Image 1: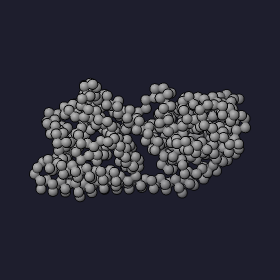
Image 2: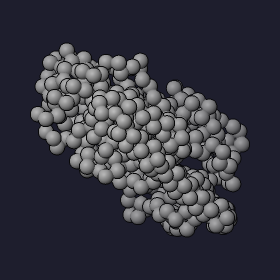
Image 3: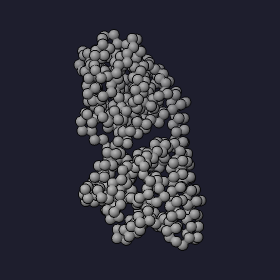
Image 4: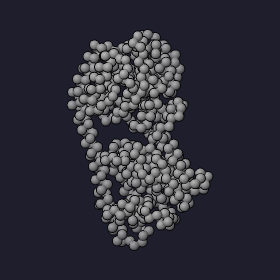
Length: 503
């Protein structure tokens, strides 16, 4: 999905759709908290402020700010507990992600768009704000040591290197935090959360953000070098032991499950092809001479096999949904679809018995599947339009729809690429409706160039047909391609905002 955020109003709308709120923990930041909260409220409609036992009037100041949610308690319990209270409130309110920002004014709420962009590109990931110019900033020796110390031990405990592990500016996937108990309740809890999320397979992404260091005399810090360094030392000691006893075995188990899941799906697919599809095709080819009858029988088997594999037992760990919108496929159409993965073909074939696809030469001439493809009346693009069109017209007359991928090639990052006009020229020549089918999640389960199947969610959405009579209103074949690309970008963006909440 490609983010197109033109103004703060659009940004606030997308944040709300994706279930992202802002959580601001604060402890005695009366001088800066109102400014931070007000600016955050301008960037995001949903702001939760956690007053962690404030004693300097911070709570009173925050309560006066309109349009925010305040969580407050009398005793100071530490930043870790404040984050926990904020996350619990966010989950209670139905949010899926929380952007945390400190109330001391060092971070810029105007950088919230950085986290939104990163969340769109990496749904379900923990986004960590890497402060720009950290090396050149005027900081205390304790602050510099704490950052280098944290970065080093995080790398030791997880095998991941991050530029800035001490920043409080982050985006957390709330549903993946649920169930993770914290060992600590204060400053060091942020490091602990990051380590545990990494152990549990959550992707961690760095995103550069601006930072402001006020003059020394204006800085408000509750960091206690002696006590807090001691707590961090004890935590890192515990985490190093847990890395060996828990983190590493968990990573090995997760890797094993990915391998087993992929192996199972591959064997399931190969056995289905070699034990059912190819022998069945040979039998049909021997017993029936009528080409239409052979084609009909093969399409029926392809439909049943792909439906069984995709929707039931073929891909473990993947949730599958189809929103047909009342589509019955009784009337032939040119079906277009965004192209993300090798799984696209099976998903398309599982929608209806009467669908034909154009293929590449290597598929047409394949020693394994060529016999099936040729008898099912799939045709290679290399035949040329003049030779293919009469065959496609015959198929449409017999009730078959033609499935095409206007992008021509799979997307590397699941974004909607350029649409070529060939698919729309075929639809115009056949005088059929265009049926837009939009896929979500396929490229994440098996991305382009990927070798392993991942857990995830696949959603197929069928939208309103565009009748042949409306083509001329849109324009030429090239204008049709451009119009449908913009249409797909809007629809896919809407699906991402809706389903990325569960990523």
